[in-house]
Amino acid sequence: MNLFPEQGPDADTPPVCSAKGCRVPAVWVLAWNNPKLHTPERRKTWLACEEHREHLSQFLGVRGFLKDVVTLEEWSAADR
Image (cartoon, rainbow, N blue to C red):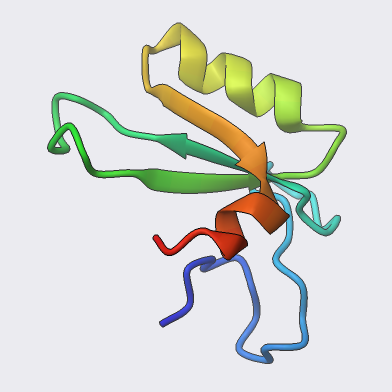
């Protein structure tokens, strides 16, 4: 199963940033959940490049959705 829907069907294609219109390879994973919709342990993910990490984090943080920000490498290494 593809953990990163932004990644193309070709496994060699790196996952890209979730920011609208950005096609830069992702470096960060922003784990979040909407407590009105998701159980507390559920984590949705957005991917971010260096340029968009702060903007996307702020967007989720203002809403109280942001739970964690880790590198894509760390996220991929963890058994999630």
